[in-house]
Image (cartoon, rainbow, N blue to C red; front, side, top):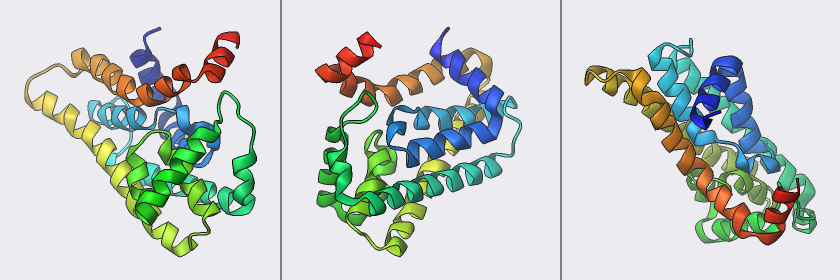
Length: 211
């Protein structure tokens, strides 16, 4: 099946709760870096305007925002509890020390604002909260950055999808004819970073082909 259709059907099937769970997993679980957070939010916003996803757009943004905040908080708690032992975790198809080290380098360079910036960077956004926990950033400080980043990300991308749909409608363009191409484009750019990461890594590539 076409990925764009799969994502549209997925959102229609799982509705708002499913979208929230995916966002939570991408934000809070170390294996969630491959999940399509950006494309999911954009498509959900687009489908909301099109009347396919039956939810108020502002409520959708609120739910996604809460899921993102909770997910990051779980990642922070994990990093805080496990500490430096996370750097000793063995590599697997869905976990690479390289990802943790990249997030650590990014954190050391940008400091606390990493939590905000990382929201818009696939892979880094999954591991940044963990690094903040390992670094023992005060939770109040982390939460402040977390709230700002989650709001900008959840509202920005979801509303972008919604108003893109509105713009097409006002321009007299049939939403049904452009929905799948747009979703495919968003998916492409969303999965490109993790796909490149996996394919350029021989161990992960071999594990993928063998699996």
